[in-house]
Length: 250
Image 1 (cartoon, rainbow, N blue to C red):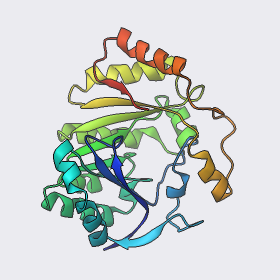
Image 2 (tube, rainbow, N blue to C red; image 1 turned 90 degrees about the horizontal axis):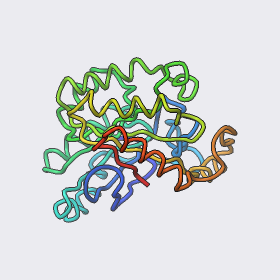
Image 3 (cartoon, rainbow, N blue to C red; image 1 turned 180 degrees about the vertical axis):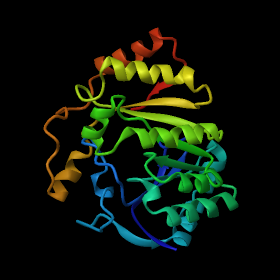
């Protein structure tokens, strides 16, 4: 089965447990203003971003790193973009990896149909689930998508005992208001089955991609990476509230 990817990144330590191989698939319904992988949004191959590849080739490439997975409890992560924009392709890769006994992780925005997540549950060991904005109106203006269907997906996965790491991109002056931080904190206690809650500080590493694509960086975004003082504020906020599962990821 063929699909379009932008990269196969080896020895990742930020896309799930252990050392992992991360496969970045093309396509995403969201248009988050802070997206650091804008080259994955379109399904088209553009500016050398993207290549057609078959699922067997991807699996074969991933298997080459099996020794790292076995020694670190790692595995393979499908990311993007939104991997489930190419559902049959993504699910085929996950299925083949599971058959080989390799741990599978799906990094998802929650925007695909519930029927697709039903299938994904059978071949996915861990979901990295994005939680971007608390206020519904702001969610739409910042991501181009309604929040409610995404939360329906989240609740579906929770009700089906999926292992989930909640991932929260944090952009100063854009989505880091106290209401949002408070809701993230409360989710640890409301959903005790969550494996972790990851805070992902904003960085500017994606800016070069926008330039290559001929697209402007949103002017409301910070001009620099999050300073350490602000990272310390986030950590202290959650510590004071008694959170044990909130981890800041650099």
